[in-house]
Length: 242
Image (cartoon, rainbow, N blue to C red; front, side):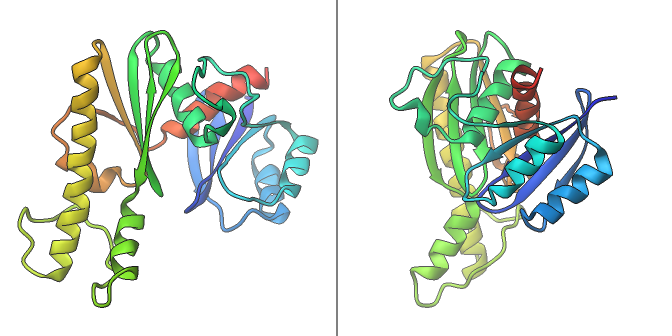
């Protein structure tokens, strides 16, 4: 059974998903991007293929290691993808947004798909029914909003995210959580409603680590999948690492 390692290096965490054929077996949070860490994964799983999506300045030595030990592909604007990018400067599209778009086309073809990624930033990625990545929007994510309130004020504390929040905050912590969490939920619902007014046969996919905090506060029907980016990477690997 062929094994593929799909690496996702985001602004907050570095992760890898292990696929046996098309089935995702597990997701591992990596302590770092050292060659020692990557070699230990190779020794453990004996992958035939690997793919890397990175939006950070990572250790480039791991690319040579993966290319030596596996059929390796680094996701970039030259990657063969299942959709077109008729937008200004397609080379500036983030690797994570390409992977999410690829997953939408792979699992929900010939539909208008809005993929919302909840990471360090919230990314709104729209792929129409003709499989064209039109663009979308980027706004601050949950952790960024919580840190900004602490950093740019004299007395507001830095607090942890929580999904159990009141509509009306009753102290400083709940006021912050209600403002941030419900503010994000209203923003997301607002974007979805605006897209619905313009497009039919419309599909909304929500992914990322903050689903647990926001999912219950959204009024719109969505498909929630925290591992969507890995599924997109696997789909891209199939094309670029045949």
